[in-house]
Image (cartoon, rainbow, N blue to C red; front, side, top):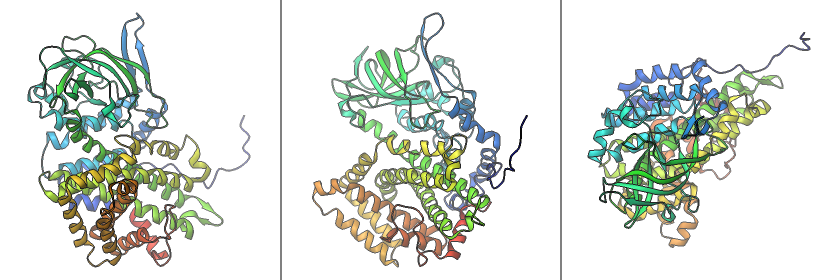
Length: 551
């Protein structure tokens, strides 16, 4: 028997059955403005589907029932298979139906990258791990398109909008996913220290077949149908397409040693593997593996920005929803001045991150435009550095809004908090990204000057921003060692300046000024909720919250 001792009250209800797209004003106005209005009805439909309780539950299930490695079948045959809960495959099937893995490549048109970015951002608010193989497949397609012979055998399977769960040779499958394996034990980000070797089987060079021997310390999504990996030839590091099955139908000798026991991103299997004369085909020029893979890395880095912005949006919505339904000391939390300050500050951060990801997506639309190239090559690594790091603090702050209720695993905040660090580490840590910004500027100083002039045009009437842009110019007059030491500081300044200009261009004027003035104010630190009344008075804070979450 149950003996009730009290009535359960003052608990915020679960948030579900809402439209992730139509409730996001910054996203809606940006999509309409950025050549992607043709995709809006699809986003409205997707936003409603993703907000359903049963869809949100898929993300919970995929992270509760973790992937399991089966190295052998019951007869003792080596199979190296990873088994997933059905929710994982349901999420991947949904993402393929929405064409997140190929949209701009299979259906090229103006605004396709922006449309895909918006849809990916919505999906990131439901579950992050399943986006990993989608991102890698998306980023691999333009690289593989340059390999005419190989791509002709893969195109239909890459562009397919079906999720084929079967573990079969490629010739027998209806669709495929591509993973990536770059890092090794001894090197991490320093892939130039890789020791895996590739031995030519019949001929050498681009398009030739090789046997790979070595290992990978992080082999992402090992059940993908193929992986792009780096291995060493006589000419140096080269890039290889390594399928899960050999062309003759036998299992390729990619031996999974174990799955990584990760902090977050737990629905997605990351593994350690060894290659024992594994079959592979060279992609790109012999000895030019790193330049070959750079194009792929630029796409995956943008997806890290989008994924982090999606996490921030989800955490913000959960925090505001909780604060509007939870009372303390006689008032709903959302009506208390200090909580309003915290939530307003978080809302400004989230909107700026959303605008930045969409601006970078627009840059991908115009690969030959010098200014867009500057955004893509210089701002993308800076944005990955800053947005992914802010997501860590952001999700932690939103968890604190929930108090103790946010710290338990059967609520949504704990999973978001554990998920946040991965984008900051994957595809280059903060130091790697900051140094990449400096390398890009050194390589293309004209592009950087063009970028600063463009930002200055936007900031012409804002003294604080003009001063920040002047500081960016003067920072590059330091010695190379000083520049390297201060690379993070420079990347932070650059991103905040870019976000400030985007807010000036697109957000309501008072909200844009609140973001800019607070980010230029030395009294507003990394702790959210330090807006002053002069920067954002109470009435404006209420307007910011109403814009951020009107539901």
